[in-house]
Structure formats: C-alpha cells, structure tokens
Length: 324
Image 1: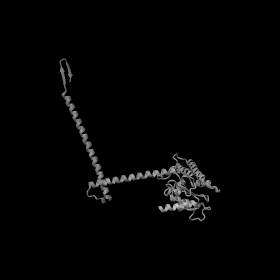
Image 2: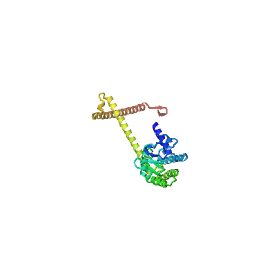
Image 3: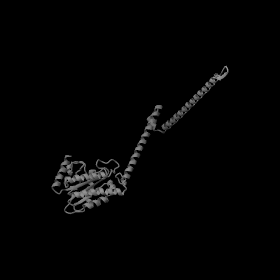
Image 4: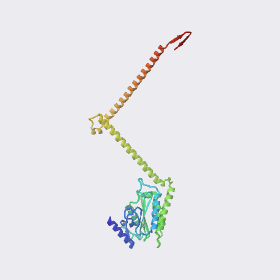
C-alpha cells in the first residue's frame, strides 16, 4: 500500500512536470486510492483528472452533473445498485497523453487504442453495479477520446448515441482546446438524449425505458417464484419431519434408515387411513349417542305431560262448574 502511494505520487509529479504518457495500469482508482491522485478532495466520484487540467470550480460543476445524470434513470440492475451509482454512471479519465500497450504512436490517431484503454480502466475501477457504466478517456494533447460502454448502459442509451454526442463535442481539434465546455456539453447532451429515448420508448412514469422496466419486472417475478419454491420446500420438510417423528413415537423399532424406504411410507399411509377411519367411527358413535339422549329426553317430556294431564281434573262448585 505504501509503495503504491509513493509510485502514484511519483507519476503525478512526473505528469505535472512533463508530458508523461500514462499507461492504463498506472491510472489510479478514485474510489480506493488517495483522492489527490485524481485531483479530488474525497473518494467516490468516477473522475480522474491526473494532471489537474480542470479548475476546482469546473471540477465541482462536473461532479454535480455526473451525480444528477446518474440519478436521472432508476437502477437498471436486478440487484440493488451501489450508493450514488444507480441508473447510468458516466466516468472520465483526463490525461494529456497516453501510452497504448499494443499500438505504437497511439497518440497520433487511433481511436480504437484509446477505447481499449478506457475498457481496461472501467473494469479496473469496477464502475457501476451491473455494467451500467460509461467511461470516457480524454487525451488533450492529441485531442482524442475513447469510450467504453457497459452492456446495461447500452440498454439505457445505445452506443450510436454516445459516439455521435462525443463526435459532436470533440471533433474540433484547433490549438485552443477548451476541455471544460466539452465535458459540460457531453453531460448535458447525454441527459437530453436519454430523456428523448425514454419518451420515444413509452416511458412508464417510473424513470425507466420499456426494456429496463420489462427486465426489472421479470426479475421481480423470478424472485417471487424462488421465494414460493423455498416456502414449498420448507413445508415439505416440516411435514416429513412431523410424519417421521410421529411414526417413530408409535413404532419404537423404526430406525432413521427405515424412513427412506417405500415400506415405511406405505405403513405410515395405512396408519394415517386407520386413524382417520377410527376418528370417523368415533364421531358416528358420538352422534348416535347424542341422538339417543335426545330421544330419551323427548320421551320423558311426553310422559310428564301425560301425568300432568291425568292428575288435573274438573272441580265443581254449587251452581257452577269449572276446570282447574
């Protein structure tokens, strides 16, 4: 760790003092390395201005616009996105000159070499959560750019949009190379293009274009299905344990090994049927007994009524007769 800090500090000083050609494996990581290596005050932003070609004011503006663009589209990943890395993550590497490992004199004119450079750095940074990232490398001396686009980022906006936007902003190769307006316009045009793409693809009022919404919906259904299968498996296991324990309680001679035999389950099934039949028979006996009790009560009531009627008679009074 100490060696890396010294090494990057040496490269930074060398880059500030001369036109150092940066190799892709020498690019520091703004998420894990000391932020000063990338001209930042703190870690966590996908930007590395190695030779501090941006002023602090311009740098702050770009960082704010990066976050704004990132939050413009909801997380397209099936899992939760990293903090401040939802939606589309657009990162920048800014150098004066770069050194390609495979192409000699790459700074003269070779967009593919700088694109490979960007792809390597994007993977090194682990930018985004699920390939929902774009990394743009800008070499200001040869006035070139290279862009690496993740698979999920292409779902948000296809790479034809990215290249046309970048070409529109970086085709000017005059002696005056205004870096800040180019990056500013790039971020603005990306946001406008995404808004247009979402509108054209029938945005479903949740900040996602149709393809991303369908993808997320499918992942939700898959999650529900998996949870349902897990619950079903738990129910089967609990029921199996219940049968096994009950059977072992009633049959002390049964071993665990017997549980996995066909004979055990046949025996358990027969015992279950017998238990059900016994319960049914008991219920019938109870019902029959209750009916008999009702009949006895009814008979007793009729007998009592007849006795009362027999005992009651007519009482005669002089000149009148009445029944009591």
